[in-house]
Image (tube, rainbow, N blue to C red):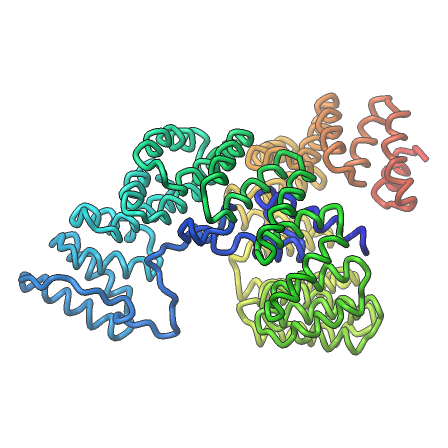
Length: 604
């Protein structure tokens, strides 16, 4: 368990490296990146790219029944034409009736016609509230044009352009705000530039000498320059800028966080941890620095990370995310009783109750406590753990001879959660297929597809079931139905190409499909294996061996080994073929794919 936890925690050494994290890593990453995108420098506590760059400062939290009054702003009274006045009255009444899309439509018309600053401003704010990006970009630019001295207008224009990927165009608006000591637009622009091209970021960097000359004491410029340099992988240059900032700034946390991350990214993990440890001497109560320190320690010293997390929880006893992280760490180092208590404590917090029940369910599974397993997994009724809990509980039931109960459980979940019906159908059909109840699984998927005829996952899964049932015509039909909707679906292209290779003699057609799949998903080992296998069927043995070796190197899978071994055997390279098969059989002596290939070739 300790080794598993350490492995999990290593995944968070670079939060920008992977798209998915394990539970503890994810929590740590969320806690460390919270709020970095749109806060001013004085309050900025992290310099990681964040999904929060997608939120504009002009947006306000949505209540269940928003009204136009929530985004009210006064504008100067002026005479309007009868037509304009009529549209504006309709817009106001639509807002009062909570029909904000209609209100926005009318305001957009009048903003374009009248170019009145008040009307344009109001249109911009409604567009921001509705998250209508196209309208927001148009209106914020128009607003900055018709009211050139408005800080709000330029701030919104900068943020909108940044979000649209127009980073260079956003800079003059951010600079306007910078002149007025408003740093958020520049900070958001630079963090958003993580998605920019290298050339775009280089263009932004070229503006910094001028900006720093005009604003010599602006600390946001140093911090954002360092972030840009990091995005350009110029890590040593970034550290040099951060060191300059540390010499002058009174608010040191953002610079400390960035330097620690830079050191870590350069591979100097010990220096990164030591730097944070020294920084905590001067700021022992700094929550984010200590959390970052715990995160670094977790890679090689889970016990040390546990100590830091324990201290944080003692200081913030009502923070459920911290408690959840500590619970995972406690379980990781074998403190089972402590982990159970912490997870039980988390049930009282709405934000972590479902996750806590899920973790308690997994621990109950390990203890083979059937009642606890059933109880805790059934409590996971929403959130990211909802489907994993459904999978684990239904499989647990099946493994204990309760297939009927498992199916009833999943059917009830579908009734209670119609928005999750498709994946729940998939879970049930997988259970049936695992029990070799292929006809039942097929009919269940067909029922689901009647409800969602264009669901690609359901069609793909039914196609695979048809293949298992040796019904290759229906398998091909479902794959082609996917391609009608999405002609660039690499998964379906490869599956169809492989199906034609294995079950028909339409090798040229299969070859074209697989090439297209590989073009869309280059480097995918499964597709490379398919390409090698179709080359074999076409008699192009050298190309077949080349691609199958590539696939085996990337994915030492039994099926790939069976393919490579067969081509090698057929071409007279029997010693190497036997060696390839042996690599699989040493781990799985009865592997069907390899054993059947060897038996067919009389290689046993």
